[in-house]
Image (tube, rainbow, N blue to C red):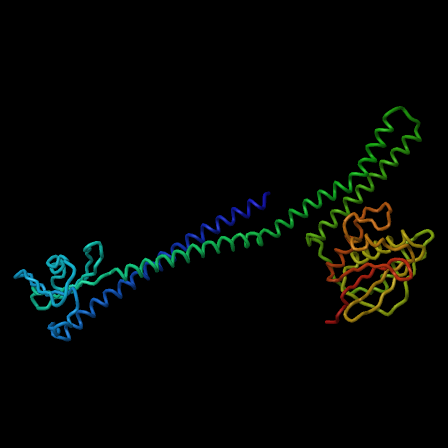
Length: 393
C-alpha cells in the first residue's frame, strides 16, 4: 500500500470538491456583487428623474443634468434639457418604455451607457429619457469580480494545502500500522536468522556422511534447541506486536505488589545467585497479575544473569508504587544504557533474544506506569518500575 500515493489521491479529491464548492460560492458572490453595483447605477438614474420631477421638469438654466431629453413619440421630436454628448436611439428607448419606466443599455463611441425612460403623461406619448455613463460602474464590477476570483483561488490553494495536511493526519494510523508491520517482519527475520542458521548447519553437517547414533542424537538436540529458541523468539515478537498495537488490554484488579515480589523471589532458582525480597509495607496497585508477574520475572532473571546477589524492594512514593530490582553485577555499559529497552539490545551479552526488556516496558506503559534503568553508585544495575497506586472507590 503506497500511502504517499493515497495521500495525493485524497488531496486531489478534496481539492476538487473544495474547488467546486468555492467556485459555486464565488459565482454567486460575483452575481450578487455586480447586481448591487448596477442597481446603484439604476438608483442614480432614478434620482436624476426624481430631481427633475421636483423641478416640474423645468430646471433652471445651467442646472439641468447632462444627457437628459424629453421625447414625444406622436410628434416625433426630442428636446434636450441640458448639455448632451451622446446620441442614444431615443425613439427606440422611448418606445420600449411605453406605459411604464424602463431601463436599457446602449453603446456609444465604445462606451456603455444606462438609459432610463419614464412616461410624463397618461398617454405615454411624452417620455423623459436620461443616459448614465457606466464606465465607473463597469470598472467597479470588474474589480469586484477580480477580487472575488483571486480570493477563490487563494481559498482553493489553502484548501488543497489543508487537505494534504489532513490527509497526512488521517493516514497516521495506517502509516503506524504499516511501520509496525515492517518492524515485525524485520524483527522476525533478525530473530530467526541465527536459529535457522544453526538448524541448517547442524542438519547439513549430520547428513554429510554416515554417523553413529550418539552423533545423530547430539545433532537433533542442537536442532531442537535452535527450534525452541526460534519459537520463543517468535512468541515474544507476537506478544510485543500485540502490546504495541494496543490489542493486549490488562485486566486490572487490586494486587499486593510487596507479596508478588516475595512470590517471584521464592519461585526463581539460580545457581550461585541470591535473590532477596526486602520486606516492606503493604503496597496495593491496580494491575494485571499475569502481566506484572511477567515483568518482574523478566527483570529479575536479567539481573540474575549478571550478578551474584539481587534485591527486590517495594516502597510507596506519592501516588506511585515503586518496585526496585537491584543487583551487584557489573551494571550496563554507558553507551548501552539509553537503549536498554530497544528491541534486540542485549545488555549482558547473554543468549537472550533481547526482547524481554522491550516487552516489560510495553506492559508497564499499558498500566500507565513507567520504567527506568540506571547503574548504582556502589556498583551493579538498578531497574525501577513505577505503577499507579490503588485508589479506594
